[in-house]
Image (cartoon, rainbow, N blue to C red; front, top):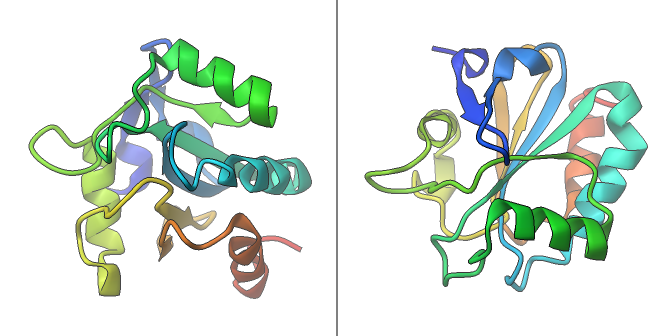
Length: 160
């Protein structure tokens, strides 16, 4: 299976086929609204604003598995993100990224890019970069800023 074979739920519970994003550069992120890394929403939005016209999409998956830092409903999370960070990229249903109930997409992502970081997601704002052909090309730790990811995207020739 490839990344485009997965279907996820949007924040309203509707099915979204990742086939919708074929040919795009994807940055897939597990997020939280009450985390020390939450201010990265600002950088993610800036990245999206600057590069969406070049086919960059950010897929935001709230996750409450780490320190109960995303306790709200999907609606509350979206309202917070829009009010505080003016988020306009795609936000999805809250998921689990590790364990028995983990989202199958995350099982796939971790298999593709476990590497030195290990297979488990360690915290919120872990990011996976997917190229236009659907290859998971890199995994970034929560401490990697969106600005550093832009540098990597340019180096890989994914954006100008």
